[in-house]
Length: 194
Image (cartoon, rainbow, N blue to C red; front, side):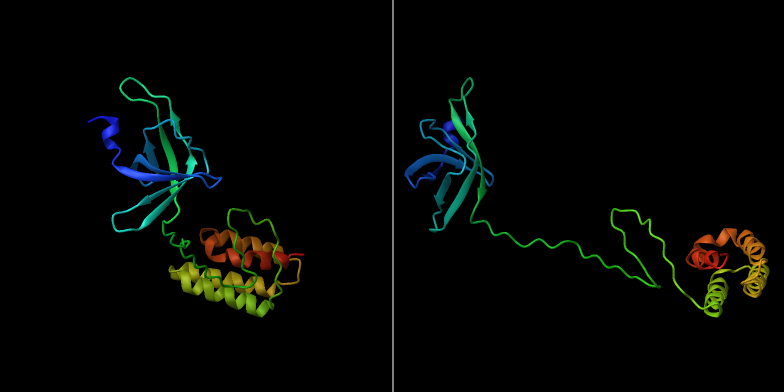
């Protein structure tokens, strides 16, 4: 099979200036059109048209004319990179992203680092109640649960006194294995040390 035997299609070359050249032998693919007559001056931005047997006309914009000098057994030709104009471009929809955000001053950082400080005024009674609730829901060891609840009570009683820092350190040492659980409360507790 020779290179010329692949040229089974007929296309029309429409130049940017409007001139048309009909019945050019071609081999049409979805993204390339091969033509074997190097005397046709094909340039980027020109258009190929191909009429199908059912009468539908396909239009291809030439993105890269692609002249090839030829090699042994293959004469000079064009391998034009094209984009089909009549192609149906379905709208692309990005994957659906759902963000479920809870809590005060929740943030979303996408490809960035959050270096902000988040100060939230929470009533001490509510804060300590939330800490007790979080501990009660997550800590399974009964003895540890009792000790942590006691430390929360001591911490609450020491609020506003010089002893608060000592109680804070004791509580944090005991709760060290549960930092992910307590992380949302640490800024508010730390703020009480000032």
